[in-house]
Each structure stands twice: as C-alpha cells, then as structure tokens.
Image (cartoon, rainbow, N blue to C red; front, top):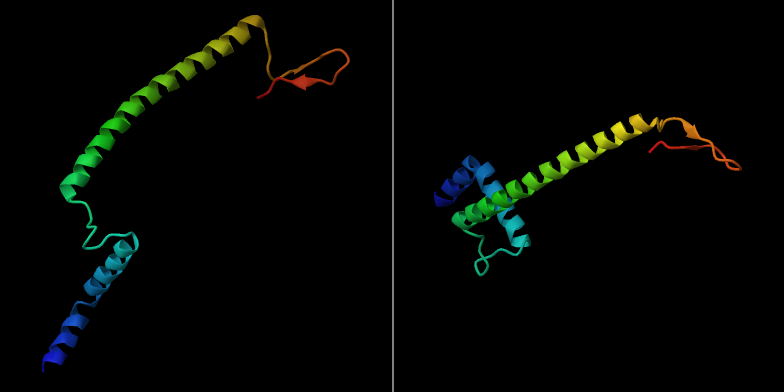
Length: 103
C-alpha cells in the first residue's frame, strides 16, 4: 500500500515537485551545490542596500549632468538666435556645394 500512497502524494503535489526540481537543475547549472551554497537572504539584502545607495548617488550626479546639458543647449540656442544663425538653412561656401548645419 505504500507505493500507492507515494504515487498519490506525487500526483497531489506534482506542480510543486516539478517546480522544485526545475529550480534545483537551474541552480546546479549555475554552480551552486552543497559545497557552494546560495548566499543567505541577509547577505543579499545587505548587498541590495549597498547597490541601491550607490544607484541613488549616481542618479544624483546624472541629474546634475542632465541639467547642465539642458542649460548648455538653451545657451547655444539663445546665442544662435542673437547672432542670427539659422541651423536649418544651408550655408553657401564659394566653390563648394551647399552644406546644411542640421545635426
């Protein structure tokens, strides 16, 4: 009667068992085993917190650079307007073809 109980148990929990086996194969393929276990959740949380702090710090620098770029593009546009430079119009150079200033 014991083999029938095992078969019934397996059928009742087939999805969970299959998921577990698939996950084990995946992590074994990554090199994790009894000799090289997965990191503990506390270690992963500490790493995550450190990376999150670094990301926030880098994003602060990104925002500053983005604002500087916006200011420079605005200054360039204002200078071109004051000097009457039209970047859309082709520039005539004697002896050469018309060259456009478009970027």
